[in-house]
Length: 231
Image (tube, rainbow, N blue to C red; front, side):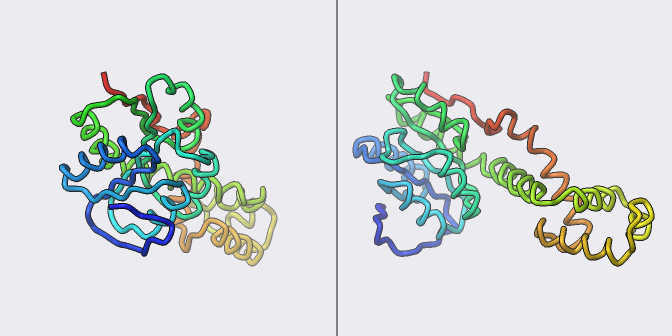
């Protein structure tokens, strides 16, 4: 299946493989493997089309992005996927001689790297591994999103949030910070809005996930940035 810039929205509960490439031979090879795995295959030639198509997706997926796809800005791709909440594992595909050029992709948003030439069996193994990594990728996205929301809190809001997460009631927080209970309630409400939460339980989860950022993204590296290449 090919999707162009005029493609219509689609939904599917079937596992989907996006192939982003202008290399027809590679596209055909990967599409055939995806089909034999019982997966839906969506071939596109640009990142913009991929983002639009993935936004209409309902179901597990992965994306095989050719390193030579024109106009790729990996940092921008990561930002757009975060903004659109597209939790899709990314595999960068490159010729063996170009693997060193994939470093920027790995630093930004790529979860797996695979080198051509590659046989059908290895493509199948890579696709299955990428799709199965979706839970981990969802966790990565949650950590990054909550971390960014925590950064929007000012010092007073962060202090109140941390005390609330530790179990302190508003009155105790007010006494400790020398503020009125009404002020604590107002600031806490503002913090809820910034963190996109509605309860102390949700706020606690947001803080825990946000604080995992340096562990999940050490030196801004994705947790699954492993070379996954054929032997």
